[in-house]
Length: 264
Image (cartoon, rainbow, N blue to C red):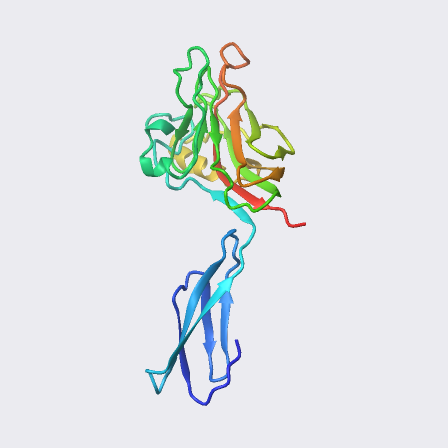
C-alpha cells in the first residue's frame, strides 16, 4: 500500500503465517502474501506506529480472498502401528480411535456381512489409513464438504498403495470411489497396481515404504460434478464380502486426499 507521511513509521502484523512485511519507508509498505489455497478467507491486522511518536498509531485489517481447496487431509494426526505396509501389529480400527480423532469427521461403514465381525473395517497407521481385512472389505468416508456454496465441480486427488505380504503375495487391488449425497464421479473404479518391490535389505524397508508415497504412481485423480455442501466421498476396497472372491482380500492403503473446486 502507498502512504504519504512526513514521519517514519513502524509496521507490525498480527499474523505472520501467510503475510510478511518486506519493506517500510515513509511512502510505502510492501508485503508478500502466500497463496491462499483454503476455501476460507483469512485476515491480519496491520498496526502502524510513528517511530518518533509511539502514542500515534493506526490499525487496518487486511483480508485475503479464499482459494479453491475444499478439503485436504494427510492423516498426520494418526500415529498407530508401523509405516511398513505388511506389518499389521498396532494398527487401530476407527472405533478405537481417540474421540479427538473421531471428531475430525472421517467415518467408515459398519460391515454387516456374515462373518465380518459387524464392525467398521478402517484402520489407522503412521499417517495413513488402510481399508479392509482378510475376507471383508472396508471403506473410508470423508466429512461432508460443508464449505461448498451452491453446486460445484470438484477435482479429487488421492494416493493409494495395494497390500502385498513380505513374501510377495498380492491382495486383489480394486478401489471403488463414489459419493454419498449429491454428485456424480467421473471414474468409479481404480486398479491400484503400484506394487511394492521390497528391498533385499530388511533394514531399508521402513524408508522404502515411506518413500513409496512420493512416487508419482501413487497418485490418482477423478472429478465430481454436481457436488454440494452435503456431498461426502467414499473409498471402498472392492466390496464388503470377499470370501471366495478372487484372492479373498482387497486391502488398500490411502493417504493425501485433496478436493478442489474446478474454476470454469
